[in-house]
Amino acid sequence: MSALLNVQDLRVRFRTMGSLKALTTGTADPFIDAVCGVSFEIRKGETLALVGESGSGKSTIARTIIGLQPAVSGGIRFDGEELIGLKAAERKSYLRRMTMMFQDPVGSLSPRLTVQSLLIEPSRIHGVSTRDRGAEAERLLRMVGLPADFGRRYPHQLSGGQARRVGVARALALNPDLIIADEPTAGLDVSVQGEVLNLLARLQDELGIAILIITHNLNVVRHMADRMAIMYLGRIVEIGSTQDIFDQPRHPYTQALISANPVPDPDAVLNRIEIKGEVPSMLRRPSGCEFHTRCQYAQDICSRVFPRDADSSDDPAHSFKCHFPLKRISADKMEDRP
Image (cartoon, rainbow, N blue to C red; front, side, top):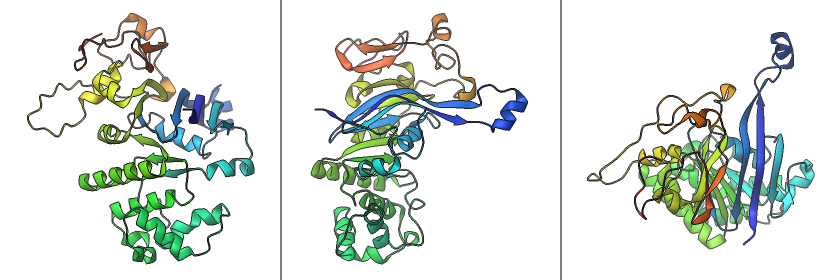
């Protein structure tokens, strides 16, 4: 199946100081690289999760895909059409087919609009005629399991879970092919998180929507994602099927993240792997493999040479950037060192 979304060697930079200050301080390159050569694809009806610590570049990628953040270089192809370089009017028709759910379920909704107005607003912005606003809002509310009278409420009258359902309904207003969900369970109780994830999974099955999930919650990933990509300092360090990565992580960073994931079993024997130190600043990226300053397996070459992409011998779709990847030793166990 061909890719619905194809991101190729995407690079995004942020300015750290103004031109005058850079000139007076002698700063030749007043930028930081927030996203460094990221590539991935999402097929129709598939869920891909971007995973990593805060500041790894996950949300920046999402904002760049929908045009809120410009890219320095690389490509973003949606259904075969290159989006980078398109004028706003040309890009608008493609943006109707992708939508974003922002992290704060209540704060992302305008407090001055009723739920009905919020659900109709995307159609108005994109010039899609709606004969009966009330009926359309009721249809969207039914899709996410909310009663019709919620259309008269304002965002402050909603609980976090209800606001998230309204956000899902709003995301569905234009019948998109792709939903980008930034931390879809953030700020929600555990029981409500499960309800929201089940809702997204059901709607995906019914509508065939592709979903890009931005999260650091591995339980969300395991519940929802077909594939996952692990990010560190603006790069993807491992990507593959969710099941394979959970069973057989190849990058030490991935192994540490999975080992720290809470397990809902009081009798489970946990073997947590602590990551030493803090995440380095993007202003002062470590040389070589950028994870070597925190990696318990690092050797001399790791601090000098940036690792190339390598593929798992039995699964070319599972790739990673590591000089000394963890070895596969059985179907259900991973060696604790390279």
